[in-house]
Length: 519
Image 1: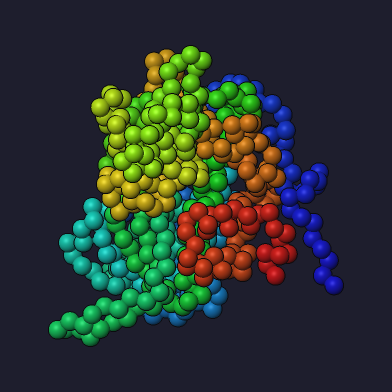
Image 2: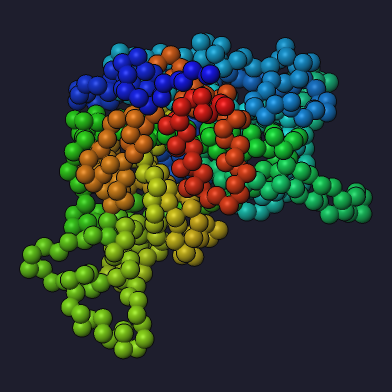
């Protein structure tokens, strides 16, 4: 008989899933950053505080785990296993240091003046940036650039070596490496930030025959949309490798979003003195103000009026009922019914939680939303490039189902995300303004235990601190790499699953006994 392992979520003083000491006490209330931050910079994100126009190639992260590419462009055989691998034997001398070695060499210094809860976030973010999820040979094709146009020079399908560390995909072009070796120089990799990437498994792609070349078929293809309307295709050497790459990309992005939620929880705890029972920032079920947003699949930022509504708006006593409210006199509905219009659009919109964007707060511009977002599944603050920017950052990421408005373009009616930067009210610090909006989102869409009360219990799946990485193995983040090829492969065999179903399935994995995951 196989001895039963203790459930990782059972409360135990010796359990690695028990509440970390820093969360068992009420935090003090100094600013989260009171001194200069550590000199080591965490991975640069595409969601910088200033509205950037992202491009496909991201600037390299400041990692001590700088990977050296393979030395030759020899034909690579398919990997024997579907998990992360090292370069072939002839390249071992130039292979990057292991994850453990890299972390030992580059752990950031933690100034004592940094708030303990922020130090924990910095440490977890640094560990995630150095976690290697997958590496191996692939064949790459750049189909579209961020502006939606094809590259000026079509390079076709090119053999590459890729490695996914954190949410940074490093890619070495094998042909460039071969030419550089003849000249005695090294070729740096290209970097792609996959934090906001949309991953799709295609299977096979056939290139039609031309006058100079026959038809070509590329199997086991996975596609990435990482910035704007760009599209990058990767052909993996085997079906097992395809599943592992798709899984690794999805898992890296999921763990990054979980770290962002943990970061958000710490901000609320520090700023609001635990904040568990913070009062709602919704006024009569609504909160509105000027913001700048960037929609998934686009690179420009738009200046709009945002309204977050819980769908349960309550009128003050004695105030006139608003059109579409449940207190509106019944006669207002009879006209539409008389002409055969049973549904009332304003009623349907006001009775569900909704994020609506308008061109301005003027009544004529608020007749019809410019853009809507429903079924919000995540709302969190985005961790900035460096800890000293925390007090100045207002960037939030909201994930949900984007409406059918024309401005959404290719994301119409699809699950996606919107980056939001609220404009500051006079005399309100950036962090407090961000938290006010986040609480409004959480209350309106009943997230993380709200509107009743936040939960800081790492054993509670609804908590922002769920499965908080603690103990000696905290550097593996939420899921050890060894279980990925065993437990997550079924995730991408179910092609009918959407983004939310995939994310919910991964979210439930930390609640399973480890034996069940690897058996």
